[in-house]
Length: 139
Image (cartoon, rainbow, N blue to C red; front, side, top):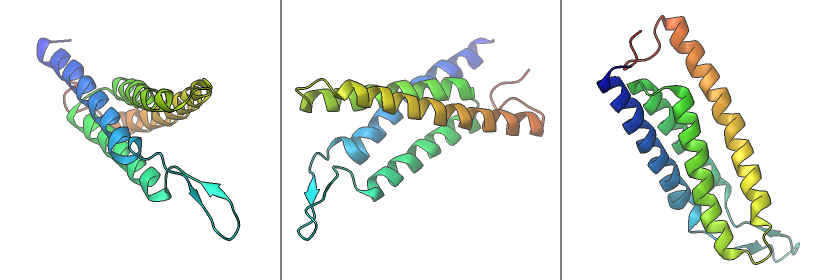
């Protein structure tokens, strides 16, 4: 790997990690309010559907953008999974005196790992179908 390709991979991976963590904090990390339905008494939250959808679309855009400029899908997947999970864990651990946030950490990590792995497989298949491994990754 040449110096410029290595720089793209390292810089791109770091950028993806920062954007993934910011996605957590921007869309959901600030919301810790639960709502109770006055009729049924059911409690929901703290996140609304629009927050989850917005965050997921943001992470998808970060993934697609990074792969488009040539960051390897596996690096993008790792960066999103680790950084988003770390941001979630920092927030959750501050509000939890039971230690159960660790269960959430495992679930967030697992969900993101599976999802980004699938996205990596799709991105790699598309790249191979087009006959190259990415804009910045010439073989």
